[in-house]
Amino acid sequence: MERYSYAIKNIMKIKPVLLSILVFFACMLSSCIYMHTAVHSVNLSHVANSNNVDMRRTSKVQLTDGSLILFEEGFQIHQGKITGAGKKYNMTCEDYVTVSEVPFEMVKSIIYYDKVLQPFPLIFAIPTVLIGYITLINLLNE
Image (cartoon, rainbow, N blue to C red; front, side):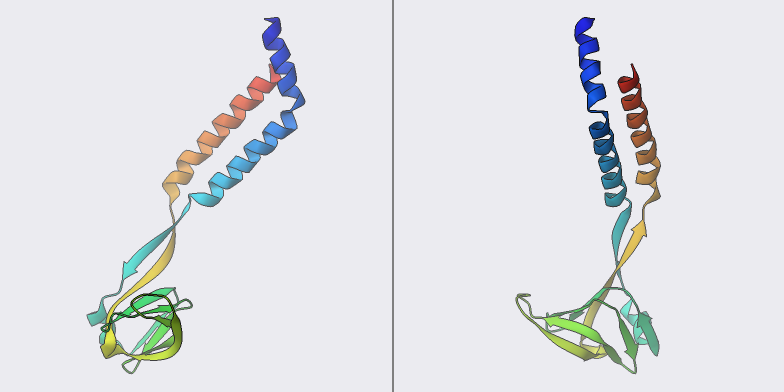
């Protein structure tokens, strides 16, 4: 029994360090798993019939020649043209040129990225962190 009381006394000496580690892992857990980037495709036939489309999300446009245009701040479709500040990459994606306008006829596909909050990991993470914290406090107070 003396051996265990010695170990507990040593743990009590490093209590601030353990609590700091616990807080660090709790912050890391909350910053990593709750946001998810979802990828969505755009229905081209629906967009082609619309006169004014304003996409304010990061998007990739694939052209019929195989090149890609990345619109980090989004784009607009107006009068059969896609306009916005884009970077056009060739098929090897080694280099890019800036573009501001592309005819809609050259578009093969459009995808955009959306950040989505996932509530289920949050629901399971909070009790896990609380149980770990309560267990640690109980071990330190024995």
